[in-house]
Image 1: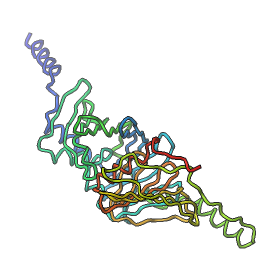
Image 2: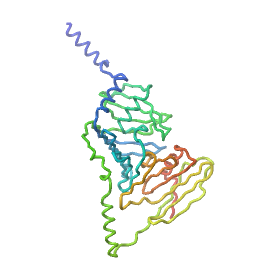
Image 3: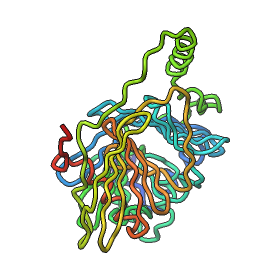
Image 4: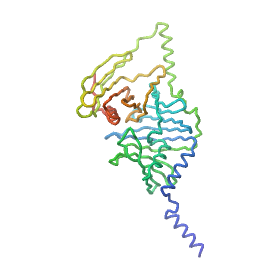
Length: 347
């Protein structure tokens, strides 16, 4: 009889949550797995919400102890690929199809939250004394504040786990409790056995374009090469967001060696300039130095400095600069350039 009672008591304790995590235990379990990982690989998707539009990326994240990172982002709409790479030589945002890269003087990713990097999620939770844990039917949710210095709109996140504290989703919210970023983890390998050779910049360089350059040079030496055709913009993209008491004061078209360039000047209380031109692939790998940070825009990863943003999207290279706009205003202008309502044909 005693054995039956003990067995019954054990089953009741198990069913009523004897094994449930408390916040401290959940954080310890999550952080232990991440901090003990010498290298990891993550596959998933990332959704960025902007107004009524959602921009979706396939995302592969690679990490190796001693500050090696590689984040491969592919836009599901246009298949545009970019790679954030950090190795012993520095931090880069590479666009393989253009054979170009921004090289940053930055401490990324330590200086901000990143929903697709496990270390940053651990730090967010540990740094929030008011973090909470919620038990769900399928597992647990840890809620914590976030630190996005270049996007004040983002306020807090919910990190979703299964009942064994395996991460499966991160949602980042604004102050109106709307999800602005959602990262869904399809697979997480905390024992990926990566090494430094998996984080080489040379592996991202388009050698085919370099070979084409060599072939073109040979043809020109033989007198058989044709003149390059200049690229023209099919349309001018105007920003949907313009600060109050500011207006478009001039639009100038310039012909360069590589094609057409449009310079839009906005004047008033908040002066700024936008430069647009057809994004052309470099025959030789080009590295553009930037004193700033990588910036995740709706359709592209750009380069943010103290007073400018550079990025490539939909076959157009953009450069936005202003000494009057705040960082958030710069970002608002940049993201509003992707809206189809602001396109005016040049034909």
